Length: 125
Image (tube, rainbow, N blue to C red; front, side, top):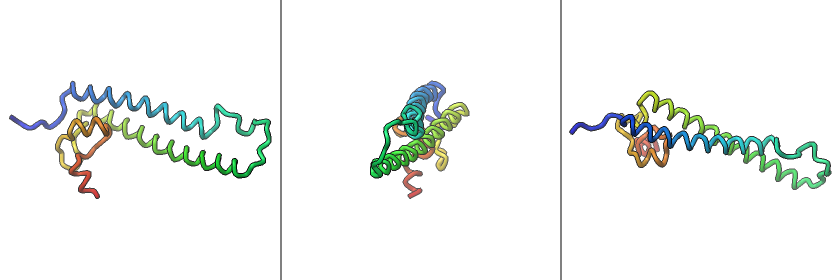
């Protein structure tokens, strides 16, 4: 029996569906974070009640900074998922970029945008 060098079209379709679902969820989360940063659904400077508490303003600034960092991470995750969809189209999805071996399905289900098998990932450390 020969060793598989790539996943079948049916297996790739299974991963495409998984990634598309995760991508949709990630994009919703990103939009939620963005709207929190820009206060598009709030009453930021148009608020009629005066704010005199400096500590509250500082906390709000910190909260926006944290939301900004989360939005950046979420955007990077979205880009990784989109790249995984391109690899599915190219039929190179699930192939370790270091070893050339197939990445186990269990790893791809847990980290669908993975490009390294566990062994190669551990060697990077």
